[in-house]
Length: 100
Image 1: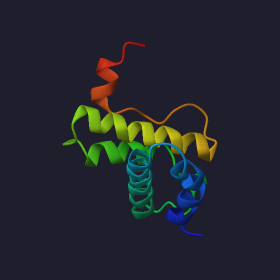
Image 2: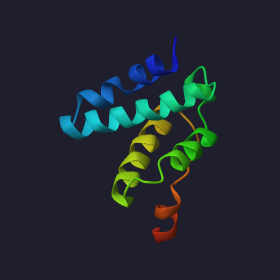
Image 3: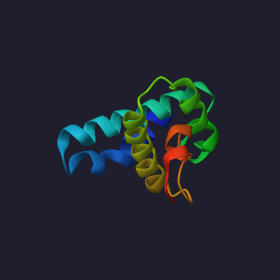
Image 4: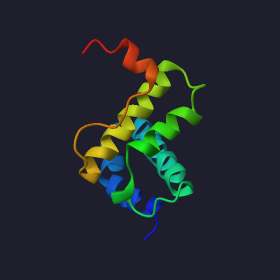
C-alpha cells in the first residue's frame, strides 16, 4: 500500500466529521506531507518522521505564519493517528512566538 493510501485510510474518519471545508484542507495538507515523504523514499507511515516534516518546512518557507500553523495542526493530527509519540517539529516562526 502506498504512503498516500495509508494517510487517506488513517484520515478518513477525520475528514468525515466536523467542519467540512477545514477538514478537507487539513486532509490535503496531510497528503502534501505524505507526497514529500514519498519523494524522499518513505514507503509507509511508520517511516514518516521528523526529518520529513523539517524538510517540508524548509521547502515551504514562503508560507505565512498562520498557514504554517494550520499545516502544523494537520501534521499533529496525522502524528496522533499514526501513533507517534510527542508532536511533529514546528516551523521556526511558530517556535519563536510559542509562549510555552
